[in-house]
Image (cartoon, rainbow, N blue to C red):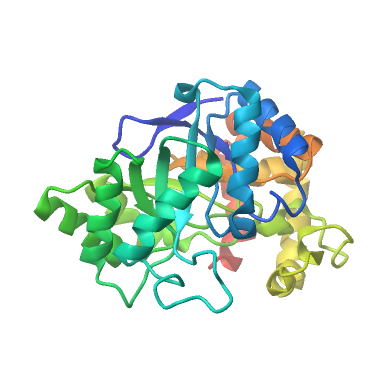
Length: 326
């Protein structure tokens, strides 16, 4: 496992990290989480991603219980969470739903700390942008979390380049803690935001990227070429919005072409897709997900594929996937 600086910060994160969206609580219990966290750490992973909204807070609690059971030294791992949607989805007050106002954020960090059983969270993200709250208010609140010692670094997730630059400029002007990372979706079929929209921003302010969904929610595993398998992510309650993309005929045909390259390299489709995302030097860490230990081990094997991604191989991959990318 190699380690990369998180943007221009001094923090180093593993090039592959472990996330908990969909899996924790829904597919993974505390015992399984503890096993997979141990496997990941043994493989060199030091960054574990979460969010307040995942399983309505239960994902944070489960990860916290697993970390406590493993008795890791706090200095040995980096943990993150994200804020925006809140937990009280039904009948929520205007101050607790889909917002980045100061009231919500200052309460949200306290809730996450309690659920995870931690004294501080390394990375905190604004999970989406909030057009109804002034960016300046959000910047002050996120900076104050760090000043208060409740978080170490803050950033954004799926924000536009313009909004990130505005937030950074506000922090610069008021001598506040600046956003240092962004968490965007990035995979073979979704690349324009990372490769085009953020390009100048990364160069100007040194933004670090912790990207999610390297397997396109499972499309790039090849398992959806014949429909939605039982027990897969696409079959889970609440995941119906993924079905159209997972069963896209044109992209699944491209996946079959990519499998030819994977076979030539002696790896799986999943490993090829993850390695491709990690190959981008602008990506600090690629967040992977797994519902079982064997799946996690396969994903972590992507580090062995990275040296095989020669310019010629990358060109072949682009020829197949880039015309279908958004």
